[in-house]
Length: 134
Image (cartoon, rainbow, N blue to C red; front, side):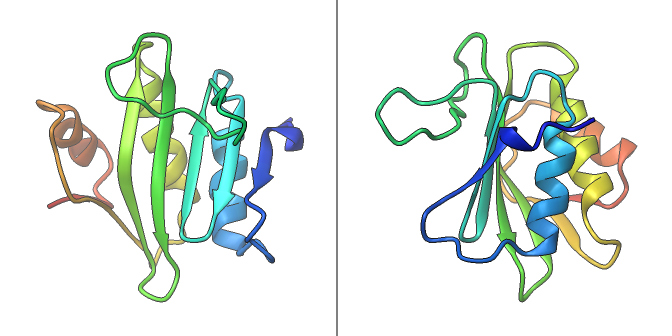
């Protein structure tokens, strides 16, 4: 059972689009992900929350003990972009990718625009043919 209290929304988000909802619920099913926040045009999910008063999921590349993702969601163009992903725990990067790919509508594109992963995204593209690495 997915804990709905893991998911919050930014103050400027009035109505949550069903695609945001589905992706957020799938991310919430990943045991290590504790915080998911829906913004206008993006979703952030992480195991840590910022301490700056904004209560934002932390997605800081290279830091230890962080598992998280930031997705850019373009409703008019039906595109989901992996903007940032980090996992200090082996296996959770793929769990995040799988969760997003499996929750996106079939007619949507899922893309990685910048690949600095040294191989991770190519492996993911091989496993998930819907994922395009540009």
